[in-house]
Amino acid sequence: MKRYSLKWRLVLTVTLSFILIWIIAFGWLYISLNKKMNQTLDNRLSASAHMVARLLNQMPLDQLKQEVEPAVSEINQNNLIACEVSIFSSDVTIGKEIVARTRGAPDSMIHRKQGFSTWTDQGVEWRSYVLQKGELQVVSAERMHTRSMLLYEVLSSVLLPLLLTLIICISLILWMIRLEFQPIDRITSHLSSLDGKVNQELQYLHQLQTRHLPQEIEPFVSAMVDLVHRLHDSLENEKNLSAFASHELRSPLTAIKTHVQLSRMIAVQEHSSAGLISNLQEAEQNIERYRQFLEQLLLLSQTEHQPQLYMEQVSLKTVIESVMTEFSKNPDLLPVIQVSWESLVNVRFSSDALTMIIRNVLENSIKHAQSFEPIQIYMQNDCLYIVDTGVGLSDEELRVATHRFWRKSSQSQGHGIGLALTHELMKQAGHELILKKNDPQGLMVILKFNA
Image 1 (cartoon, one colour):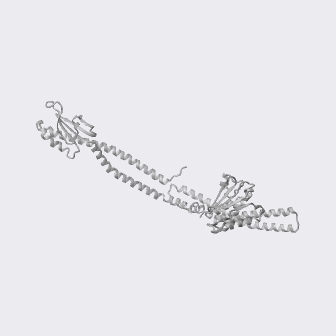
Image 2: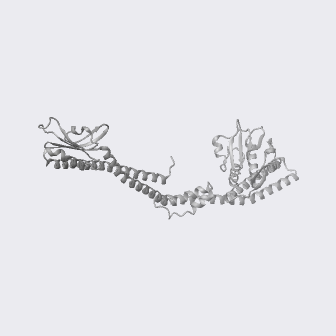
Image 3: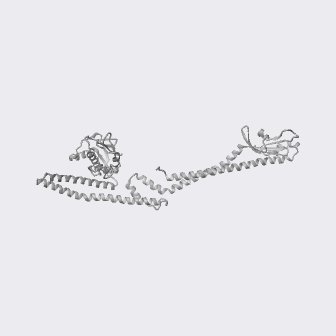
């Protein structure tokens, strides 16, 4: 499902709704205003023509030419209305005789039909009204450009406050939505600042108060917090159980190992059968194996509980030498290891934790690679590479290899805790464990030490 911001989606929806309503209202205003203005200006043309006709209709024809100029000039004081007066008596002339015309009036006004009409003269659009009263014809006209300019000025005076109101409304909506989303933003911002620190995230959600949240999301957040509470309690119980079990089993195992060692010594001294001595020796090795498993399980539990490891400058060369010396005492851990000693540098880590990590990774490579080729260890770009050419892992196995108690098969040696502990220790120190396929065969373990 595509991610989106509920807050900005709400702002966008409300803004578009306001703009759509404003556009419809403005369109309605434009149509209504244009219609009303044309009706008003048409009435003005008609009134101008009737006024001139009333003034001139009272004069004899022989005086009409002398008196018509003042009457025509009166309606064209601002050069807005053009006027033309003509006589069309058959006793005087066959056609129409123009008596007077305002300056700038078009020549074709005399040929207009009676009533209102719109026409074009030399590229200029005109609107005219023709009045015929007796032997007198009065034509009043005005440019359509004048009407357009008047409509533009009226709409501009209306549109500017409309736009200002729209901007203010959108700003208020944005401010109110941001104000109402502040509780959710605080939770999101705080969880984002924790940057994947699960323990702190759980602790924050565990202490989260829902009474200040909006009513619409309060049930969802309450259910989530309740789930986190139960998950937090479950994880704490699991950690406590692991720590308690590891600690309580340590003493009995130590006692059993001591008794087995004592029994083997007595059997050797009394020259008991070789089979009994071999069984006691195998039992001692298995006890040691489970003791190491409990030590790792206890360390993993302690790592999850403690806030941070003690960090210091540690020599990788010294740690690897120590682990290889430890392996030399066990005949089952005698592989060929090639180390590029000159590439190793100091890293910032806990000495004990880094020793545990190197031991786990090398032991895992030795036991599970199933290859006679040497294991390569070298460092490059602040990354320690431990590469084998064994059977390797599939993509799905690489994904789950660091999960606790995972093993490749039930016949595999180990307990599935080594890589999980390594991953947790690297993460706790701010570093990274990377598992990759080695080309063409094998496994590549990368310990990435971040600055």
